Image 1 (spheres, one colour):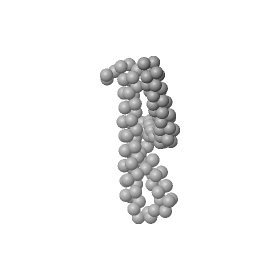
Image 2 (cartoon, one colour):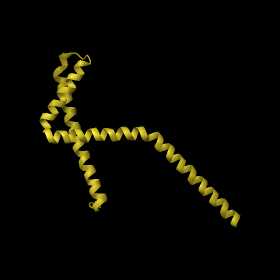
Image 3 (cartoon, one colour):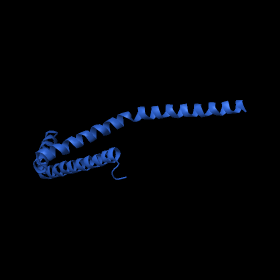
Image 4 (tube, rainbow, N blue to C red):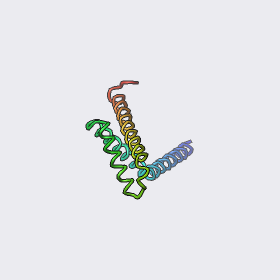
Length: 119
């Protein structure tokens, strides 16, 4: 009986060790993607908070102008300038609103974890 118990214990430990090693390998493989996602969220939040400080309308216009200028410097013809600017303005506004939504979700998650609200 003792031998059977030791054998089962050995199998369980081996299985858990293999599982932990697989988790470490999985985290190691996913680390670049997680870091890129965290950096993207940081950029998104900083852009939306900067828009909040400087005024969303003016900030959107400024960012759209910078992006349009960059696209034109890459060699796109200027005959579609109005459409490019409208697209850049839409994308900048969308990123700002998305950043605000992410900030609200993060704030709600912190409130839920720290204070037990919304449970």
